[in-house]
Image (cartoon, rainbow, N blue to C red; front, top):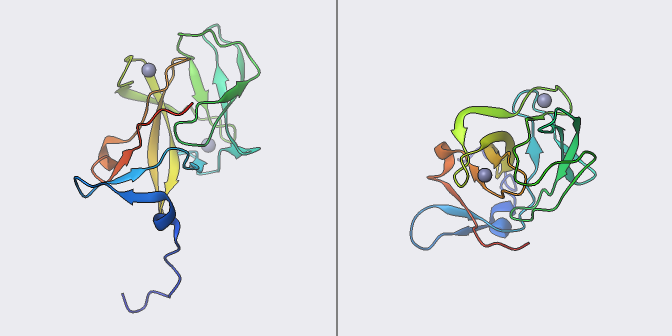
Length: 157
Ligand SMILES: [Zn+2]
Ligand SMILES: [Zn+2]
């Protein structure tokens, strides 16, 4: 403790984290900027202030998709047609082109497949899961982290 330089702990937590009243967990607030990284090559996924990913549509068209990096803000842009209500076939890192799909996990709402990338939380990077079905806004932090972190469920879009 004593050799920790002063100022190492910035005010990030004070600004964005609020203690949850009923337990020891902390809550990520709606609107929090999620700095995102590829879990495979570790490169940042941000481009033009959006989470920029490669996407494969249900009809095998390849393009890009940009997701809002703000928690519970679901704006997005894409250069291909993604039919509503259908799962996209794949989401990939734009740098290393590795798939971000996760085997053995499914959406907590519609049971579709999910993809995962890392988000910077405090001084750590934790897996963030999103549903692959167009129009489904389900997302979660990995179950391993849920004891520490809960997501703000208010729905502001
Ligand atoms: Zn990558
Ligand atoms: Zn879903």
